[in-house]
Length: 275
Ligand SMILES: Nc1nc2c(ncn2[C@@H]2O[C@H](COP(=O)(O)OP(=O)(O)OP(=O)(O)O)[C@@H](O)[C@H]2O)c(=O)[nH]1
Ligand SMILES: [Mg+2]
Figure: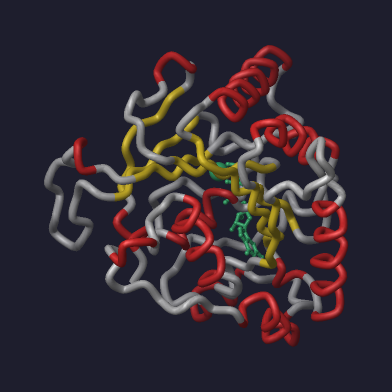
């Protein structure tokens, strides 16, 4: 059990002035529309419908905050969140690159996103989610470069890795490491960027992502997270464990049996082949 399982919906924001004022660490999930941000949050938090995941790109249109701490999350518990006990926030950002959003709305979101990631003090790190089959699109690179000057960490999840076979996964990871490694600060030191493979469908990379995010939120030290699982050092290396299923194109049918919790994964198909 991870402390992230305590996540609760906290608030939804569509103007910067409405951002929560609480100074607890927050980690935001950024990425193209349909990359799998909401699905990853649901899986990490072990809840089916915390963040709204959908086949329809552009589903997450506001900045959604989920609080960790300050509430019991268990069956039959609906007690109010004690705000002074909130330890951290997970933040689901609207996806970028969704072609069908109108010009004005697109501009509004890009500006909101840019200002949020660049200026939000309590934002301790970004989780950048990119489809493993087409990572580092222009907009991903733009997001990376907006955030890089803050000097804060970016952890990349190469999502939907179930769509790649073992060697494609290894290639994607190697390429991503090379690209991320090319970012350096003025003194030539590498920026705090990291990357892993991730499949919500197969739950691969889950332990590694969970540990990384808890670390970025400062929720690991002190042993408060009683059920901390041991770091799963095997996660990236073992991504090949799913390799035999890597060719699956119709994942919908497998989702139910495969996921111990149904993370709300539906067949990612309709929008899959959009650039
Ligand atoms: N095969 C596969 N499909 C996935 C995986 N993760 C998410 N999906 C599917 O991808 C689609 C988009 O997922 P979302 O989590 O809604 O994507 P998002 O990044 O939140 O999208 P926006 O809210 O539009 O920004 C859904 O159909 C998911 O079921 C995965 O690991 N493997
Ligand atoms: Mg979403």
